[in-house]
Image (cartoon, rainbow, N blue to C red; front, side, top):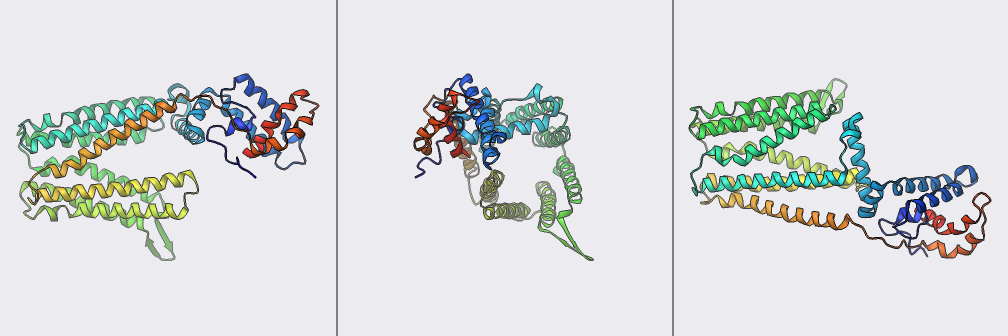
Length: 421
């Protein structure tokens, strides 16, 4: 009975090499690799069709356990963590090219950096929301420029990070340049908005939104170029052209965004006197379009049943998109209720944001605690495989002419290897 067909996570490679404990020395790992690689080499087993697989399993186990970085990640986070590490390093090498050896950041360091940067982002946004809520509630009469002080700090940090990334990597310069231009136009819009609200400039809101119009036009132009470069977006059958769903979705979303950024400044300038419910109808259309796209992605990922890791990640991302759409719909609804004076307080608008920030920090603390506790793995015994006991005597009676007496102790590793393959 195969009672131990699936060994515990983090010991499978040790079983492959026949090591009794996870704190085996580098010399023990090398000895086990030499012994098993000779025993299972395909040239020495020409009549065994599984010899190649066993030999490759031994090579893979030695490749991981002989590397200090890979072995530490494997001991701490198991095979899933090792796959994430290898995927991360492949991504870094593909992005940085020849400069990877100079600027590569280890995954744990990158994870800590990502956690700190994300926490700083959430903290600054939370402080901004608190300041805006206090200003709208008339708790203090600070200028809008001072209210947006956390956003200016975030803007400066973002510009600095993008500039450093532009200097470090040549492969991603076009994407980083596009992101930097978007940030510049958003900053220009915020500067003009603060100047008009604080009374520094006497401009109509239709002119304040000029950077938004430029940014939106740039996004639409780039999206059109991307659509033209992808022949699968249209299906040509004879003389008829059937436009697929992504193209229709893109056209509707572009029209909704253009209508939204046009109606909002006209309403603020008093040119249009309709209710905010009608003004924000394009925003509801955008949420419906994004929700339909997220549901379609989730349905496609569910039908594939998560066969590969990429499909499982796509399914999780689709569910996250659905959750984000629901949250944005709730925020838009509460904002409409406040603008139409159905609600008398701004707390109903900002309370979900404060709760989301608190939840994030709680989850971040839990994740950091788990990472710290798992980063220092304790040595443990490697359980033998089920077949080792039944073939122990037979394996001990074997003598390898090339290995001599050392082959007597390899039954644990060979049977562990068979279970691994």
